[in-house]
Picture: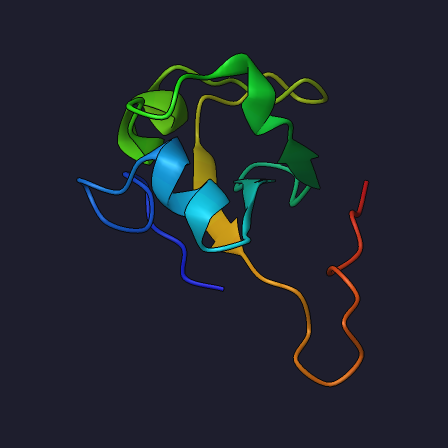
Length: 84
């Protein structure tokens, strides 16, 4: 999983995530919470960067939320688990 404040790459879009079979993962740097966000609420043209800059952690309220393109484990086929 590749993390940075602006997302995977500044130009990567939600459409790119969908086409590549990945999910939008969010990690709070304040409390380490990891969750997935449903991408259905966003059009294909929205960038991961724009989403990251607009988020706050629902648990601790921190604006320091990292976005990541998350893929299934190549060995098991499972998605990484969320953590609270």
